[in-house]
Image (cartoon, rainbow, N blue to C red; front, side):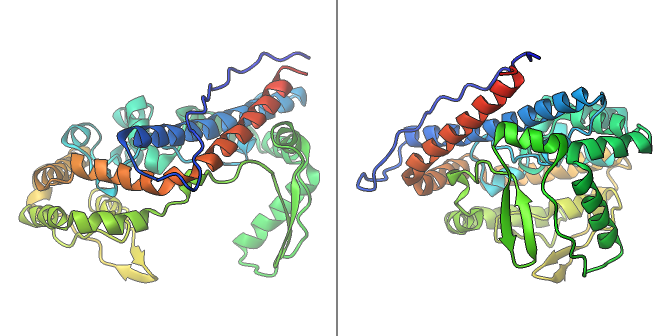
Length: 374
């Protein structure tokens, strides 16, 4: 059978190889080139997920199945999404972002038409990319359709996708986990069914790895991009030294507005998630740091009294934070410095990056050949 080819993402190799002897002087052009390379790699990872899902669904259709578990088709993996360099301070929304999205939590906590519409909004999806990764609303729809099938259909689908042996193993492992059985020691069977066909079509034969707790099978494929080798904590420690006064001004502004108890953690993050989840949506979450429970700040009464609507309350708080960040100087300057610092640590890895992208090009070719029926 000849398949219709799925259009592939064009990936120009924007990088030029550098030798160890060349000076790693960072220019604006370097920043733009490295940033675009990371964006390309992120988009490539997403395209590979879509290819895996396409191949897996074609295989399952050949077995008579028409409704699929979209995440299972790609190994329950959603890659991280990178849209550009962004310092930890960028997690504080701008005034414009706060007015529209708040802290991007109400669309997930509320079951309203407005929340449903926002979750599917491309701009909202891009805004939440750092936390949500490459998530497509169609996954929710496909998952709901699959869950609506009979239990018999879902079991038959999973057996056909994983193979009988691996399905039985997964069921036994799940039961042992739910029962708290630490002695589960069944040998993991190899991949089977359409999952095996998908893996071999794109990446080649699965590999058996030996571990201290037993052998296990993994699918081959590209490892982490060399671009992910820089630790954000390392960069933030340097950034925060340069912006200590601005951070202090921001936190003082929050206190003046009634928001006490906030501080930047070692990665430059503020715990706004637990703050909003508990204070606005009564989620009852607890925060921990190094195994110790951390007290989550409470919403001040004078802020809570402004509105009874949870969406409006989140938006109000987000606007207060956004204006404090703007007034304190935590905007354009830190973003430029963050991009430069990141590039300084990555510019010597361009040869590795080119090799990594070329490897992915090969996986694209494998997948395309399968889809075309060659």
